[in-house]
Image 1 (spheres, rainbow, N blue to C red):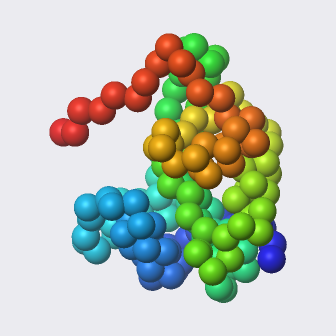
Image 2 (cartoon, rainbow, N blue to C red; image 1 turned 90 degrees about the vertical axis):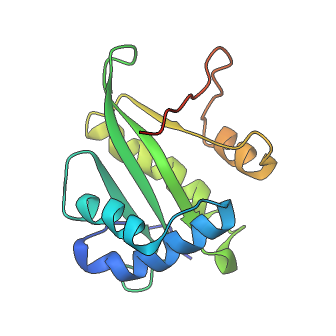
Length: 149
């Protein structure tokens, strides 16, 4: 199984929606089809705030990763946040997510991204181990805080 990354396009919306719905169900994220479509379509159409990559064969992807972009004075410029990473359950535990987490940062660094962040549930030991192996480090002095608008 290959972890090849393909930049998703608007015609990938339907296959992406199926995977996003699956991810949201697994994670207990409360969303509906209209909300997911509204959030995904601008990224697929090329707004500069982020990108969606399909993982695996472009015609039959086995997962996706969404990266959003912001600016950081601390890190010296453009930085990214992994918003979602999903691998279909049937192909998990094959090193695909690890491959993605090693390849994508190199690609983003070549494009000028200075840092890449992600959020993980501290209780999800498997995910924490995966991200640690991919050289993501916890920032003990900081925590992510959110205000929904």
